[in-house]
Length: 358
Image (tube, rainbow, N blue to C red; front, side, top):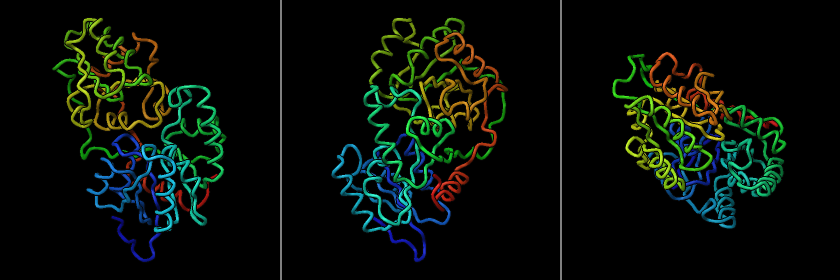
């Protein structure tokens, strides 16, 4: 159901082509919960958990066939219908599929905004082959000519957009994160062992085999160390076999999906050795809640974390040493410093709607 806007309000349509609760959904739900100052926001997304959560938040949402699972023709038809009905002043697209559809059907008089969440310096991360990456680069170069305001979630993301797609002016609006009501207080080193955690898809770009190799070095020196690799994906069987080959099946747990908040509460360190990250909510949540963090020095990670938390994923000894330090030395843990909260993020997004930022 779409609720009516109050007279005189400006309407923005957020176009989101995913149904699940990944990182982009987190961004959407945070904005839905806080709101954009001065704007009436309507969300367009396909049926699924994201749509259900938006309804629970009592925000305006159109749930309709839209996104890769529904096909380009149905997505274009849906978006045209919604645009005719709502006549938004701003259309804000998220993720490549929505970006392309929005560029195809951009209504006259509307400001078209895009937020880039998922570009990588390494083309293989998202496109698999060089040929496909070249085709998609051409597509993005073409659709950006129809975009009025270009946002990126990190400086690294903005730079990748410029170098790969020829993007002009790109404004950085980082993912906002609200801190706990009380800051985590430093205590003593964990008494229940080194409890290490990965929260990521079980996919090649997350470099989980490298994390297991580093953990094997930790485990050799720390009999109380445990590693939880939470998530689902195509690498599960290979990761279980690797754990068994190293004699660590009883110390490496692959439980599938875990609630991130509960999982972090039960662990000391979050590890993320990805080939690329743009602005990881997992790292932000870990830092906000006082956990240790070890991450590869790629993409937007150095914008979130101090150097002491960053590692070369190809160096298992360095990774292992960082994991132990982050577990045992509470003073070495990162914190968030002056990172923007959700309100600041929403204010920056709303401000970007005032005009083209090429």
